[in-house]
Length: 349
Image (tube, rainbow, N blue to C red; front, side, top):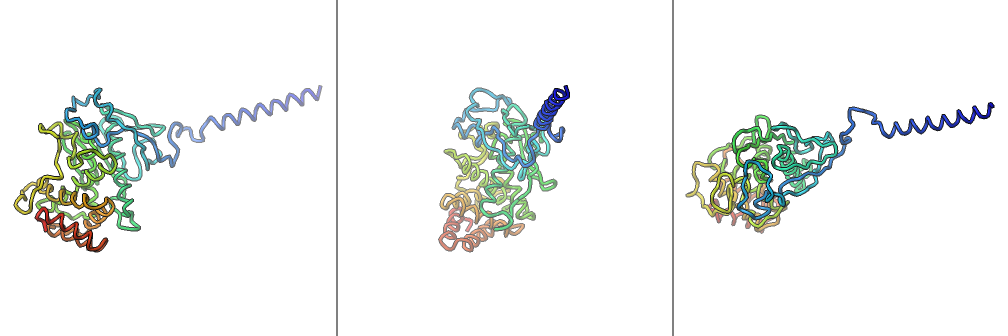
């Protein structure tokens, strides 16, 4: 009798231990964190355009169609790895953070961000991916605060679709990039994102640059160059000199659709005007010709390094000479001669 009661007690203890073990496995320590990626879960996946449907598919007939996710666009969606996430389940990370948006903030308990262009979250994924990849490339060139001075090495704040016009801009007031809507929403085109990030980079390097005249042209020209360069490194397309092929379908009638090009063959000083965007065409082509004749690491390192030393109201000849001097200092006469030749071809030197 006593033996039977002892055996029953032993079986009860075993069952109790099994039950406790199951609870430990199934119930999280902090119920509030259930369903969220754990701290340090820094990678995920998302669906984006590389860099945009027109360039990727080489189809000039594609149009916005009121934000519709129509059949012809489907091949343009590509799945990419999202890196440097902070583990919150939102699009926040080391180098980009979606500060605000129209509609819902993108959230995924598994860091899986699959949306289409009809969803406001799609542009959030685009901005996060392209800004993060641009910053990773900058640091791969040594601009990490150790080997070289860092460039905008902060989580870049981004506002999506909250500017009610078909325009985007970088603001130093809150250190934000703001992307507009109207026609093709601006953040659907990687080269618009990269252009605005180029402004943030220059603002980080040289915050006193004057946005007017030739200096403003240098700023716009670099931003166009940066858009083409990073786009071509990550997602090469046949016409890299054409900027924002997709966004520009809403406001251009000629083909190929381009916001601007890097091969207009303008000449200094006769083609300088009062428009910073027009003046930027001279500077962007000179940078593009430097890049065409050098590898990307050499070209982008000397271009970025030189911008730390531009005077706030620099002219194009002064900035070109500074760029050539930087090339000479970093890489010697052979590279410096290539840089000078590119600026001489535009009449800047």
